[in-house]
Image (cartoon, rainbow, N blue to C red; front, side):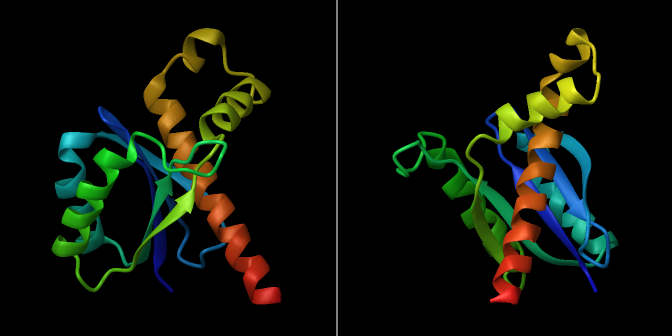
Length: 142
């Protein structure tokens, strides 16, 4: 099997997570400067088998798209053009930053480490991917 890769897109930096090849566990991969994201992804999918890319979908509490969608949509269009055979889908990312901070606290990270926005982005991408995996598992049980 191939990996699933997730993206927590940000204007300055983007968190990335991937599954193991059995698609059981989501692991943080890295954080990349957003202007370097597309070349990074193209290089990664050449080196590793990737089945699909999941992009965090930012939504407001009322379920309307967040303001940051105006940056994400053009990037996803470029990504789909660069990798036409690769399925790219959106997945709700509400509350992932808050969950990432909570995970950092629960994990015992000191306050200085919790201020590392790159780490928060990577953990957020991991949460998006783990939630995606769980949703797919739930769908398969129905």
